[in-house]
Length: 113
Image (cartoon, rainbow, N blue to C red; front, side, top):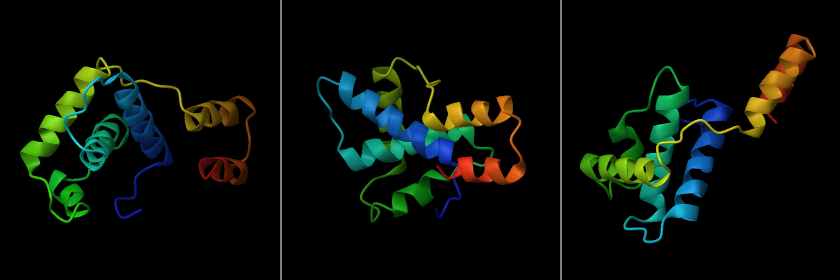
């Protein structure tokens, strides 16, 4: 909410995190650090304005360095095989609204589902 991320970004970050933990045999970083890395990756993939790494670190009470986040980001990307394009429910709804040619009110409601 503080970063005004799109709904799709959050869903994608969750998908990355889920894929990472499903494939990682040995996780050498904690959940919080992996989550921040996934939000950063998803933001780079979807958003036009990406949150600064320093701003993301403040949510962890400054427990990590920029290098920690960069290392975690690379580790997540390698573990998920650099597969960044996942279909999310939000992506489906966007396409569904377009196909049905729904009005603006319905589009806004679908955005928050």
